[in-house]
Image (cartoon, rainbow, N blue to C red; front, side, top):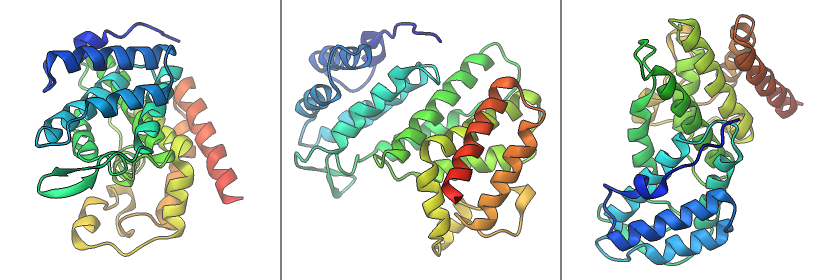
Length: 270
């Protein structure tokens, strides 16, 4: 497992932070990820840096973008990825006021304003499996980003079940063009179930009526057309079947992760 260092001072530059904030944020995250500072101490430090005025919007957008950038640079099974999640869990639990974002008041950390919007932009970076020189890097970053998002959903820091459905749809409900696409999507789909399976299963059991916008956004893929949008038992069972089917010819790594996800499903259904 790689434990390559992350240059936090490089990652914080070029964002909407003051030079002083850049330096403090870099030091805070470096200490948290290296294990020399607790998640709580790091969260307290970030909270103190966040403006409570019109500058909050640019600060938060840059902060969440920074977290995503850090997550993408941590290998999938590296414990530093969970350390990053622990910082966000500690932030999410803080009750230190509200801010106005896009004309509405939001609890600063309970609502994590703009985090979902930032992650939605990150979702545009899914690999295209075009055999370009940077493909391996893009795939590795996509795996880490999905694990990061799934861990946050599983920890109830976020409620972005839409990202889970989009990745499960892309990996399990659509034809896959190459073996590498199959293995990548099998790993990300498995990661969502492994890290956030309880949340996804609860959504499945409590299937709710969707408005027209959500119905379109959370629609099923071409391999399961006719199924209702959103979470439902037919879709859940299809995911389970596809994990079994795709893992039969998958790489050893993808097969191992799919088997782990299937164990989680079995436990949830017991």
